[in-house]
Length: 463
Figure: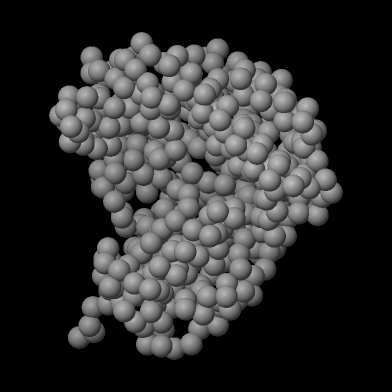
């Protein structure tokens, strides 16, 4: 009888990585590996992030920490950083074995190799967009054969939950066809590929059977869903079907491109029972000139018009976004355009990032690079403005009636407090709503009225 082997899985980065880790966990468990939280496992797998410099550093630190903690030094790096740098990362960190997305389908075999001490050669990175046809509708037949995470090849669910949260990410698609000048993600995540609707619905049912009450739909670009399936309105049809899954109380769509947010999708997001009116809009800037250099569309006025359209349908709709400051050539006037937009937009949450060159991107070749100290100062200035504006927006919600999905109950100094999220609050990124004195169990939906705020966080009372 084969001795049971143990594996410790560490996940960094975004919700898409969370889904990938749960797929890896299912593959490992089905092959007889015991998943454990112990750092003393036979092998530690670190699912890395390679998005920006800070995320890369966190991933490298996590790999080194796992190596230090592992008694035999059996550490495997997977995920975006591993895929993006391959052999280069392996040369820089000989302590770890580096695997690619192509290894996911055989992760159990690769871990057997690691445990047995068999040498594995790290891959040489290549542009994964070249693995699939340029024409989107030609991709579905080929997508399963090129190691795309999240594509198991059919409606059978390949996933193992790694926590008991009442909310869980559900992947709509992988990859991206956009060519934003600052972003390297398409080159290592590949071309855009939608998951078939029946596969998504099957996984939604499985998640509901495992205690999930909120589905958080994720991808690199959710507004492109269906274009490779020959149905650009597929998402509008899929959302109501997901909301109708028994046990699912809330469906949340994330990663929306403003230029692709068609009126029919806005209608579904603002009028479908069980689908929250939540808009995670990737604005990135508000100056039209900066956005053109980013190879993006829009400007402050068009974005404000989009927000007016959304709020005309649902005044309480949640809106969040991210912004890059200090992009090559950004003038003080263009920065001022962004600051004015932020003051007019009334966003619930906004992330602010200082620009830095990313390997292999067009932006890295642009003239007009700003001094790093200037970029940092601009980011700090805009971040401070955003903190004030987010706090003001939260204050505007005092008196609103909301429904809070309870994530957990904590024992505070003055009694039990239910901590959860209203419709406009996604897990991990948008703040929470606290209900002092409420002992509702995780997964419960509690009608409440907002009585106070603290930054992006809200305080409410059950009603």
